[in-house]
Amino acid sequence: MKLEVQRTENNTYIPPRAITIAGSDSSGGAGIQADLKTFTALQVYGSSAITALTAQNTTKVSGIHAVPSEFVEEQLVDILEDIGTDSVKTGMLFNSDIIKTVVKVLKKYNITKVVVDPVMIASSGAKLLEDDTIEIVRSELLPIAYVITPNIPEAEVLTGLTIKSIDDMKAAAKKLYDMGVKYPLVKGGHIAFNANNEVAKDGEEASYITDILFDGEKYYEEKMEYVKTQNTHGTGCTLSSAIAAGIAKNESVLTAYKNARKYLQNAIKYSFNLGKGHGPLNHYHNSVLFPDNRTFVETLKDYAKKEYNDYVNHEFVKRIADGTLPVESFKHFLCQDYIYLTHYARVHAVCGFKLNNLREIAKEADIINIIRTETQLHIKYCESWGISLEELERTKEAANNMAYTRFCIERGLSGDILDLKVALFACLIGYGEIGVRIVNDPNTKRENNPYYTWALNYAADLYQSSVTTGIAELEELAKEYIKPGDTERLKNLCEIFRQASRLEANFFEMGLKRLN
Ligand SMILES: Cc1ncc(COP(=O)(O)O)c(N)n1
Image (cartoon, rainbow, N blue to C red; front, side, top):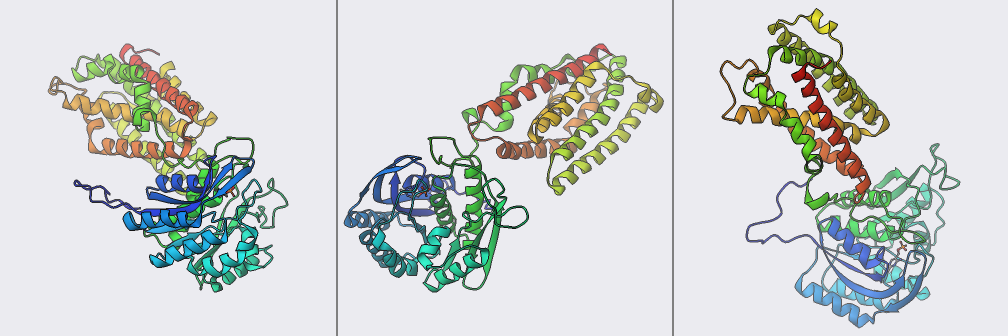
């Protein structure tokens, strides 16, 4: 991942640039529209030369108006003479005149990074390439193609081979290489496999698909999940423009392909049920935007403003800061905190149960071990307050204590890992804020305040760095688990944070009033 900041003070930064030479899709899901959306989502400056206007939607292409080839040339030349480009993607070229013109201009300007999507038939069934053009594609376009991205039917037309297996796909890729393409990519979406590695009979039993990328020496076999959905309008356009975007960023073809595949898989996974046919993809799934450009954590805190403030400014906290908390209240709080730690470990065990990857599960196990060490320190700290281990173990769990910990467990069991982490987050971030505030506040009583070391603990680097990590992890989880635009899910998560903040305030209430 690139970490350098791509903007300079006098704005001399030149973004990666790509051109799409393709047809316009009035419904916005494929063609020029899909390409420009993809370039933008992948932070590449996109320009376009339109080859044809199509009137289409998710069910049909009702009309095609080809652009005269001279005007395709004029568009391309205007871009190349002024803005320039780092890569080109071609889509629907429609007729021989346009193909020949495009090849002529690309050759004239020495453009070599050309990703060719050999568009022939729309997913709705309409022809997007005139019948007599295949020979021209073979003789003119393939030799200038850096990458070509046919699906299986397109690869069959281009090579004349019949493709029924992975070996057939490899043979087609080899043939395309011999026809002049540097990196043929044969997409396997039309041959899905089931869990037993047999060709799946239907979409129902389909489990994964395989693409073949060939570089003249090695075949790269990329397996990926078969996503069961009707919403596939524009998949070919999106993959090829995402590859062109990666190449414009100077990525190797293999890296550009892998990143493009990941982008496409998520665009399909989070696609929209728009229209009556093959619905469009979600091109902006990678830019989770929370209301008013807030981060996820800011969104949670803003939504639960009142409850969160009642919690972090609780009377218990004020009396810790000025040293006026009754000793018996603090001792009661410490005994309950001992019980809390055990349940806190249980909540992390539920986190482990909710995760699928061993590295992540092991991280939860590490946290549980830290909680065990913390508990040992807590026992020592309690001893310094004259509370014995026997007394700690005799303590009955207070209702407010039970409410918060069981709420977290319940959210975890009925929801997913994000629900659970949000429930736990109120504790992590709130105590961090309380610690820093007490320590920085000039009115805090530092001398002869027996509670000051308690606050110091939460302001210390060790705790603060776990807050920083917790925030970063939560932002990442939010990107992964909240579909862009899913306000219902976001609201539910905000409600969890609000409840957790209330329950935290009640925990302090219990400490202050010694409630059982
Ligand atoms: C202008 C234009 N270009 C390409 C496609 C192919 O996309 P799909 O196969 O997803 O329909 C299309 N439908 N329209």
